[in-house]
Amino acid sequence: MLPLPLAGEGRGEGLPPEEPEKQTGTLLARIQQGYGYRRRFHWLTPRRIRTLPDHSRKNEFVRMKQLVVIGGGVVGVTTAWALAEAGHRVTLVEREAALATGASRANGGQLSYRYVSPLADAGVPLKALRWLLDPDGPLRFKPDGTWAQWRWLASFLAHCRGPVNRRTTERLLELGAFSQRCFADLQRHAALDAIALRTPGKLVVYRKEDEFARVAARLSARGPERALTREECLAIEPALGDGGAQWLAGGIFTAGEAVADCHALSVQLGERLERHPNFEQRLQAQATGFSVDRGRVVALKTDRGELGADGVVLAAGLQSAALADQVGVRLPLYPLKGYSLSAPINGVHRPPTVSVTDFERKTLYARIGGQLRVAAMVDLVGEDTRLDPHRLAALQRNVRETFPRAADYDRAVPWAGLRPATPSGAPMLGETPLQGLWLNVGHGALGFTFSFGSARIVADLVSGKPSPIPLDGLQLRTA
Image 1 (spheres, rainbow, N blue to C red):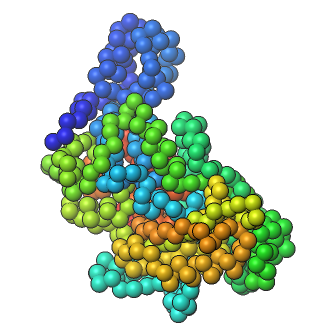
Image 2 (image 1 turned 120 degrees about the vertical axis):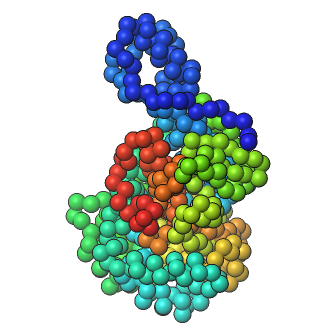
Image 3 (image 1 turned 60 degrees about the vertical axis):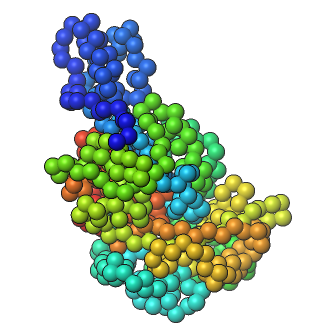
């Protein structure tokens, strides 16, 4: 078993009403013995402890746990950070040599806190049939020979009902708003300065008049979204006119939505994490299973030995399902394969300023630093990360038609990644039926957007606190 510091024993319920000097000694002893004071007080000395106001001495303790987070993508790294900030000792296990090499590598980069409608909706099955008949359509299906694919599809179709979609969307909107606040907190504490962050707003454009009218009619007059005519869309994003835009029926604009480099954020936060006082190590290892004692996870097995732990958080995307299955926990995850192009921008190009999503073609465009990131497609083809030349050619035709002057598409770098999705479209957060095994998985195409909020939720739950937002629809039993 790999040597790890032992977690502290017992619980901290605040200081007893003793003399000041005795209180000071007790507090200092608890900190030295492995209790995690809130991180902002990690510098406390006996003299400084005496100066704390009374309320700072009450209910500030968190029982420090030894925790392992599996997964070095944006969800895993933000989870490790949130747990370290909550006062726990954390080890991050990632099988690759570098962070964020999977679904976080070259995703769309949009932080869409208010555009969170899950794929499962009442009209999707009929649309899916049309998409499948279109060789350049956004959806592709190929049987992969597994029962898991058919189980996932059956459950997905069961969620394709209006009332179910509305309930899921409401919960995801709450999670998105909470995640936006958590991202602001993260920026204040971690000072991430190399992530190409912009807040240009998001414009969802529609090609069909009836679809646009239906969505526009549902907007709240007091909400942040605004329905725009074709002319208003061109005014807010002139680059849409470079391809003619005869197809444009209208759009929905949301101010304040952001874009950033998910890969760069994951890497830089990982660097900040390495210097965090509660961070133990980043271990390059393949997680292979769990050691369980009397119904509780006590260690993570890896190809480099065992890691003793008070708890393990699964944040490893699709790998999480195979690991959980070993201890009788079935996670309804399936990979939604997506593609992206990262095309360089120079002085002769006119990329879109705002973040743009083409609703019908399921394609998004976001300027990230000196590149235009174009992400699209939902392929249900199993765990296949190969670059399909036919899909890439279709994506090239699409982007050249929509934004012909936006970037140098001849030098675009292609990418394909697998987004771990639940049938409902909502992530699974919280503890499993097996004590000490926690989930932060199943975010689908919104892993970047939800990562900050879901990390905070899991950190609070692991710490014995209630979730900061309702978890109905965001747990394993409702996935």
